[in-house]
Length: 159
Image 1 (cartoon, rainbow, N blue to C red):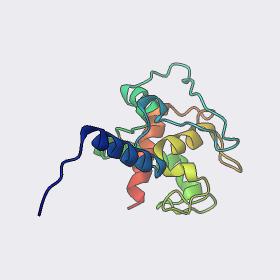
Image 2: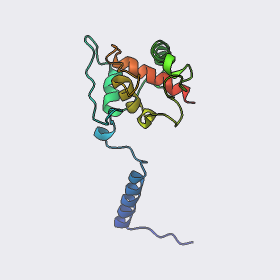
Image 3: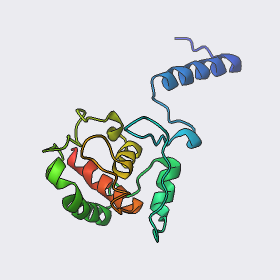
Image 4: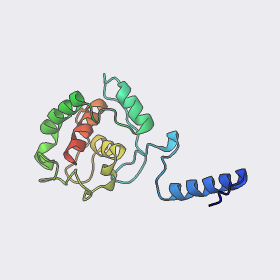
């Protein structure tokens, strides 16, 4: 068997083709500035996230806003706190297992708002509210760090 070496220009062309195809299929992350897409579930408008009076933007929140990565996922202490917050604020509508009661499911692929499948999307929904009875938890006084902990807990239900 004879091995043929590709020229540098052919390797570059092949790499470009693979990159374009992978990007078109959604297999590549966006550039760092484009990674986080915070949109309102109500009208798909871009969202901003002012802090509560006296709220301090934690490093976890700053990182999340910049990257879309919730560093509380997999953190046992944060998940335990998220469970307490979920029990106090969410369980009545979404049920103990997140599959929904009065409110829609938060687990699986059959969510009402597809953006809830991503952490930035779920953050937008919790922070800003959604249609129906889902009011803004920002307006209820919830801090952004608490929202991240709730999300970390909810993601443990989807296993």
